[in-house]
Length: 337
Image 1 (cartoon, helix red, strand yellow):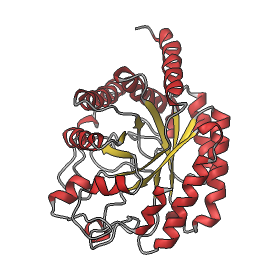
Image 2 (cartoon, one colour):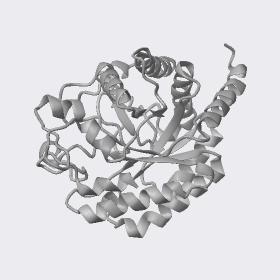
Image 3 (tube, one colour):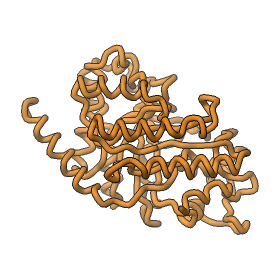
């Protein structure tokens, strides 16, 4: 298909997505990508009464309706930083879908973690010329999403990249080279829409309270013709060493302004608080959900906790929301509201 025909087609797909989302239920949920590894190592999940139970059922009973699953290209078997292959993701998506969860897929476009500090190419893509790198992004995205669809699961949202304020697939897709970054993001968008035109495509940046960072990034995205439906935000007061009470107004203001300025929906795709600070984390979640709901015209789509089930005794991660006795933290009761 000639390039000149892509723009109207992509605009139509974006309109189809927006129309389908008008009356959608507010998404409350979690990234639970560690779950298969935790179960494989023998971690026993328990409900609030201490009875062994399916982790996903526990989360559902806490009011969650959405799960987010990350995908690596060729991951290793390391429990904390590996797994998340296509096959593992398809299996977990199917399991969650059978319990009624809505599904978000998060492409890291790496063999392990991609975040603001590291956006390394998969080893198999390291020597690809840029045109072939673009094709690899398209093929990988299409392959995973098609496999999930073939399993009978609808992917409602897809992230093209994970926390990418500096770009992705460095150095080719660094923000020092926005024309190339835009092309890579658009390959992911086109692949997702080729699988399902109703799939909401997310571009994700960290520090959701940092208004200047988001404006700088999405101004460039607009200038370079990046195609997407939703602005994804991370919100972790812990990492910027401020209590949520100092930044929650900035988060809400940012989401409202982003939605209006770029005519996009917004989604807090990652949030977390200290597992040792139960009451504070409960209030953080309560405030984040309220702030997202306050975005006009129902353009605040939802709030997802990052790996709440990743108990610190297993993960060494202080921002989980699970007790070491296998029970969920009472902080997660905020999702019942």
